[in-house]
Image (tube, rainbow, N blue to C red; front, side, top):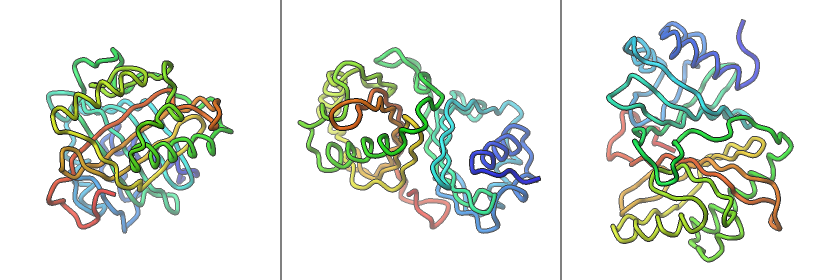
Length: 260
């Protein structure tokens, strides 16, 4: 029996394809016209089937967060067994007619240490404010558009809690002060991140995820950001926690779909 909701589809697909490493699950749970946006895999179900068939026995996946918004489902977690270090990842899926129809991702090696002392995936995991979707979406999108795209950095305090802001980016400390120190260090290295456009948004409860395109040090990048919003404040809410993965856009991809 096919699963019903988008979360159910993705949960079953990930369990069968990556938990049980069953390549035959691709035919059951992925659409024939499956579109791939990963920089690591080719397009279509056959490329995905070959990838699943080649997974080592040491492979495993630990999901930290599972969010859905309409036909989009986000998984945030860690892959083990694909290399010498675990890989922290965001996986975004689009579900259509009870199957996975599209996939985007970003992976980065797990850091040995972080400035904040937190890991790249720890922190709150469950949606506890299901009625806050609209607020979280508005705060996240407005923050990105105002501060990161329009670069009105002097307005950051309108969106980010000055002190109660937990950071999971390995090189950034807590609070607005931590953001400022990290930005100054990156500017000194000529690695200023520039956001140009938000392509995908997934909001559920107090969480909001965005997939954006831009550049870092002049090279094209994909920015995957996950924010937790507390739902208070004059503007409707403050961002109080942040996870991310930044990944370069390679000059050539194994498909023609782009990364966004």
